[in-house]
Image 1 (cartoon, rainbow, N blue to C red):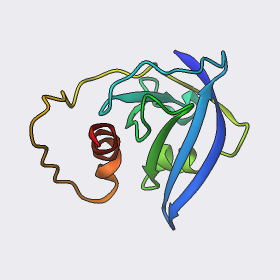
Image 2 (cartoon, rainbow, N blue to C red; image 1 turned 90 degrees about the horizontal axis):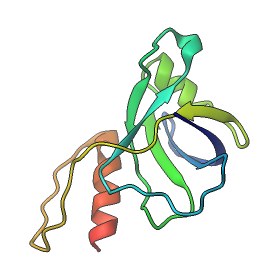
Image 3 (spheres, rainbow, N blue to C red; image 1 turned 45 degrees about the horizontal axis):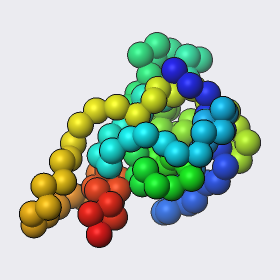
Length: 124
């Protein structure tokens, strides 16, 4: 588990926010693959295992980002984060995509575009 600091928030819609953040140890290059996710922890919300959120950034960005729709206590707490807030989360993990070099077809809806956006941008 790592501590992350919010560096920017972007209000995408009235209920969806992108949170850009960096590790407190300030590592400049994040080692993850498009389509991976992190588990965010807010122990005070009574969910000790945390909740997983897909990364919407690219591994080449100088930050990590998640794009979250505020639909429950956990996602609302994430959408309320401000610049310089610190929170706990896992390192990126999971598997959703392998670039085979062949044609790519993506079908998604709503905030489910978050991991797919990262995949599309990485392929382009």
